[in-house]
Length: 130
Image (tube, rainbow, N blue to C red; front, side, top):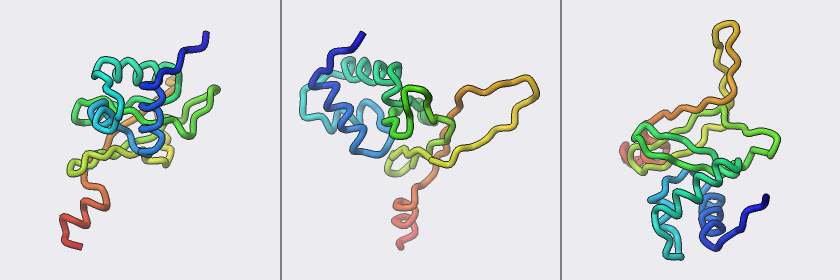
């Protein structure tokens, strides 16, 4: 069954595509031109996650971030990567290098993600006066 595409859904999707970052609902709501409430944004983001349009990341700050799946197809998601959250500017980026985790024999990984926090290169330069 196909889902109806609303103006709010399209705007959320456009914001995620254009940002190139993983965003939480507050970041998205700040950028929206439509008057869309918090619950609606959460429903849109969770539906996008279920449909494989975005992937969800729980940050080290406990917030949920959503990133547009630019490398994913309907046949498979490429989520086996870490994310980096800058504690200064709050940007969350996907670290594109795929990581391989050595698990004990008999274990079969399906998906993993992790968050590394610190200072992004832009904030490091500002902190160091460069």
